[in-house]
Length: 133
Ligand SMILES: [Zn+2]
Image (tube, rainbow, N blue to C red; front, side, top):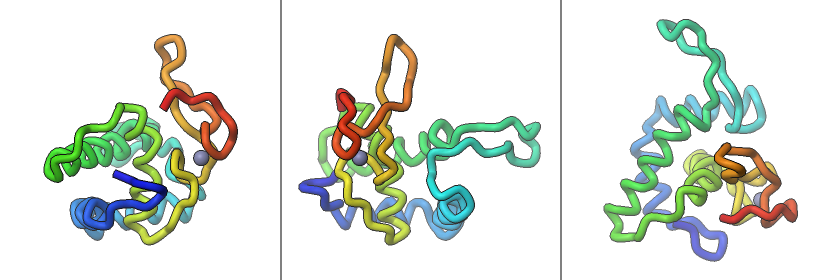
């Protein structure tokens, strides 16, 4: 949950606790290496080195946890796109990295289902895109 651009600190604190030192280190390392979280990584050992988008694997786990936290807080679940567009900013908040845009993690990129495909689109708030939320 994020109101007027401000994250609920209990929400971020709980998410950071769930990520734990290893989870926080993982995302910090990705940020430091690639400059963003929306990247495709080579597979992990035992995984056949199959590349995977962080959004679809680690990001999915974060989004599921964000939903769980909303449930625990008695907060209604947001639209699926909200989690798609906010999990990176939430992770950055857990790392102590503030973001200004209320609809993305300041990368200017959002997500939208277009013709049944999940496509990256310009953020509707900071890049003037036409995302539907
Ligand atoms: Zn934005």
